[in-house]
Image (cartoon, rainbow, N blue to C red; front, side, top):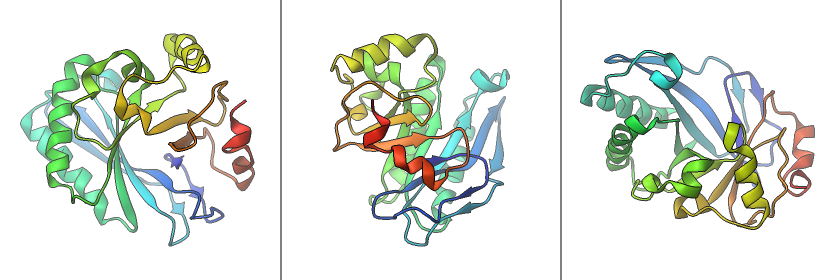
Length: 221
């Protein structure tokens, strides 16, 4: 799965039998008791048969600096806006990208439960997760999602300890984090990957066909 963030992307060169696209469909910003809606504004070109995952990025006080009320009304509005991404063309799954602070976890848990209850049973629900959550933090264990994608890049102070642990052959303790990997094109990993897991790849530039030459085998040193 190639992450396609907020920039023009032409991915018509993809082999749809090997690659899917997880694209940023919208950004929802929690400010006080409001939800600020920012739809995707950049074009995305794919073949009609390419499987698409609609990603909703949620930002709150951790990013905005303005305290969010985390109210029931905000939760209801978030659920409604996320469900609307299913109306986009060729969507086969939903992903939520929310770097929830500790004080926001109860709100996030309730949001995911409400969303799962309203999603069709055939639509997978994915979430991104800080890699540190997958190694030593069990709050993910009861979430109603099909996978929590461990983000093994841009990890700050956790970068070296987590990468060293994975390079030594250790796995994520949280079962939800054992379905996939989240990696970045510019951060090759010295670890053995389970080839049965889904691979999500982030690029800090618009994807080109040349980028695919490093995936997946040549990407891991």
